[in-house]
Length: 160
Image (cartoon, rainbow, N blue to C red):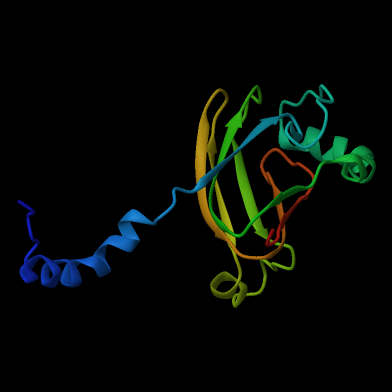
C-alpha cells in the first residue's frame, strides 16, 4: 500500500522552506593561511632570512629591497566571497598584526571607513595565529603588516 503525503505536509514545507536556503546553501568561508617572518609573508615570496628585533629593522630592510621584492612576489587571486585570513607569527619576537584593504583605501578619509573594505588587527605574538574574517568583492586589494613592516602585497578578486 502506498503512503500518501497529505496536504498538511506541503503547507508545512511551504511555510518553512524559506528558512532552509540560508542554512542549507550557506557556504563556509574559505581559509587563506599567511605566515609572517621578519619583514615578509612567506606564501608570496621566498624566505629571505631577514632578522629583526623591532619594526625599525624592517623599515630599513624594506627601504633597500621592497621594490625588487614586489616585482617577484606572487599575486594571490581569488573569487568574490567570504574569507578567513589565518595569519601566523612564525618567529618574530615582537607583536605583529595584519591589514587587508581595498587598493585605493585612504586611512585619512573618514568616508572610506564606511564605504571601503578594510580588516585589521594586532596582538599576534610569536608562535600564535589569528583569524581575520572579511567578505571580498571584485577588485584589487593590498595586505601587509604595519607592525612588522612588510611590503603592500597584492590580492586580486575576480570572477572566474
